[in-house]
Structure formats: structure tokens, C-alpha cells
Length: 470
Image 1 (cartoon, rainbow, N blue to C red):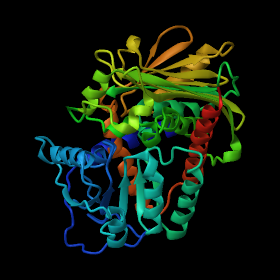
Image 2: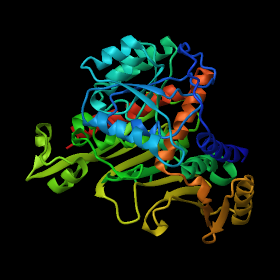
Image 3: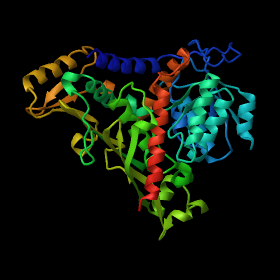
Image 4: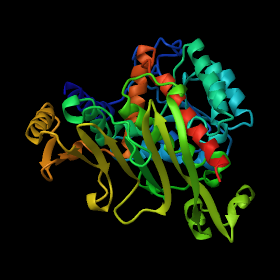
């Protein structure tokens, strides 16, 4: 039970840390050697490589004592870069808690070679076109640079060996290669995970069946959305699955990660632990007007013509994987729609089935699109004893403000205070803060690298199967 308390309080600590002051040490001229970060002000020097996705900017939405305000950007000239710099400028000029980033931009055709040869920083942030991301990652670690990469690191089974090689090189060079798993910082996911580790409340994870998996997750996303207060302008290549990746290897990465992180916490997982049972893919059909609204482009670029039918764009953004992980059945589903209902945004559903209780997160209309965690005791469980154990667990966090609402004889809702319900954008600051801790310690937890490899093996293998399945 102390594990839950520590996790929730750690979440709060990160929030406090990232809302605090910032003072960069401009006197520090040289980068520390890889693995020798001390936590000193300004010792981490960011390099942003070809920022084609808005997640690159979200890493810089907050200030961090350990990160220098000077950021070196290497990218081709164009709208992707312009939109990125516009977001950074917005963070610098906002009225509350403004940042002070000083972007040093290089836009020559040899931007990648220039980045590698100059090494003006020590941590490369990669968030953009996924077709070339794995190459960017490999080039960066070969140069002895740490890498903080947006998901997905790789989008095809053919490229997967390249990612495995990148992890080997990173280990040899003594640098940290890490992907941005924001969903681990959702308070409902944190609590679902921690409650699952209390035998008196969850028991053990069931094996499940193909029809009723032990772990089931669904993520619903929207093409039209607001980011940092502005309507997001998506690049046209985002709709090209050969560049962005299909849904089964994109957002599904988060779900596969959560299956591992929650269902098998801190366990080292291997490719041999995975058995793909089935995988499928299907398109979201967008009208020409939809495409124009989110890209500001009047015409489809030529590379999208292959996906256009009767004037409408067919984007294979949806995917589902049914698989077994260490013998337990899991199913993950990603769905993309054009625009969310009023009052809604991206939503997450998660079910973990235990021998003592089920832990379920819902975020639908009934929950007013707020993620809501419920605990349902299994049949035959002593409800009096179960209720006492659950109450004791929640009362273990006196400073967290958590409480329970009984919804029936065998079902409870965890009432979560608003201060812990931070949004998706704020999770990037939490991931970054965690990565800074890893840089200071000079290593990742022993399970992180093998589990990242296993995660991308799962998504790319499922994608390959989905293309083969008629």
C-alpha cells in the first residue's frame, strides 16, 4: 500500500518541480560526458532534430533547472519547422510562467550531418516523420548523443532490427535512448497499476481468453484538436501511413506499453514472451473539407493520391492487436475519428481482470469524458473484508485527497481530487523530469530497454500480420 502512496506523491512532486523557477548556468561552456550528469543547472543541452510533430515542442513547454535555455535545432526549412518555432515562441511570451528558450536554428540540406559533426548539445529530441525516425535515432546514438524520442521509434518490421541495433550502440556508447510514454503519468493509470500490485485487492492477473482478455485497452483520438490553446495544424505527411505509420504501430505503442507496465510491473520482458494471435487494420475516411481544415492545404499532395478514393482520404489510422504476453491474453485497440463530441477529447479505456477484483478505467459520456477508475470485486469474495482492505489502502495516502465512493455491493469508484487530474500536455514535463533523473543516475531501470524492444516487436509484428491477413 505504501507503493500507491509513493507513486501518487511522486506525481505531485513532479508537478511542483515543473512549476518552479528556472535559472540556467550560462557560464558552463562544455557538455558533460555521457553518463556523467550531476544535476547541475544548465548541464543538459537540447538538440531538436527535424521537429515535424507538436510533441517536440511540448518537451519545452516547461522550464527545467537542469536544461540550458539554448536549444540547437537542426531541420529542413519549411512549415514543420515554422510551426515548431511558433509554439516555442508562444511558450516564451505567455503571461503565466513564461519560458526563456533561445532557439539556434540550422536549416541546411546537410542538417543531420551538421548536427552529428557539431554536437552542440548532449540530448537529442526526436519527434517527427516516423519513416526516418529510426535512422535519426541510430545516427544520434552512434555520435554518442543521448536520445529522448517520441513514439513510435519504429513503424515497420523491416526497420525493427535497426532499432535493436541502436539500443546496442547506445549501451556501448554509454548514452540513454528512451521513448516518451506520457500515458504512464495519468493518475488513473498510476492507481490502476498500483492497486493491481496489492494481492488483497486485485489478487493476481487472470490468464483471460481471446473473448475476454486479461487486459483490454482502447484509445480514441481525433484529427482535429487544440494544442496549447490553438487549433493544431497537422502536416500533410501525418496522413500518409508510409511516413506517420498506421494506427497499429503509432498510438497503439502507448497501449502495448501500458499492458507491460501495468500487467507486469518492473519485470524484464522478452520477444519470446509475446505471441501475436490476430491483428487488423481499417481506415478513417476523411472528406476533402476535413483535410483542408486541419492542414490548411487546398489540395492533396501527390503522395496521398494512392489513399484517395472518390475524393475522400482513406487513412489506416485504426488498428487492433490480440496477443498473449507471458501467457495472458491482451487486446489493444486504437481508433481515430475526425472531431470529438462537444466537451470531449482523446479518451482511454482500460480493463485489468484479477482473481479478486477487476480494475476498470472509463472515459465516456457517462463519465463526462473524465477518466474514472472503478474497482469491482469478483464473485465469491468476502465483501466486508475486501471493503476494509480497499478503504485501508486509500487511507494510506492522507495527503493525496483520494477517497472512495461505493456504487453498489461490490463496486467502488476512486474519487480523485482535481489537482491530480492534469492533462496530456503536462505529462510531457513529467516524462522529461523522469528522463533527467535517469541522466543523472547514468542508467535506466534494468527492465526499460528490454521492454521497449519487446513493445516495438509487438507492434511491428502485429502490423506485418495485419497486412498479410485478408
